[in-house]
Length: 137
Image (cartoon, rainbow, N blue to C red; front, side, top):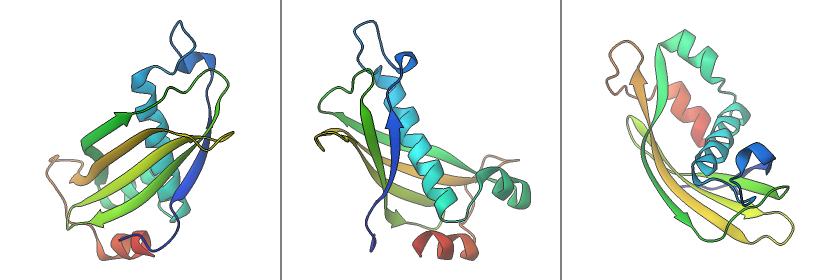
């Protein structure tokens, strides 16, 4: 589906991101990927808090699959990509990669589905046409 190069967001590994051995704690990779998706939306002109206030809809992570290949470590500079690979009526599927900037080694890969839900009922909501148009541009 993607016609453009994947969006990329820089991340530096801080002490708070690591375990006692100086390696990024596994759950923190999800935070890095979430930030990249949020910044991808922002780059597409979608501010999530404004969108929620205007529409009553929220984005929620509904599926995730992560492949850990190599660890990121304290002080590493990383790049997290975000590539929309499928848009359905009520959800978006992304492929994301985390690479170490110094040598471009891919450390972690994630595939996820993000659903749009009604904030009041927590039921799936159809992606509004204006949103789909913005995200596919």
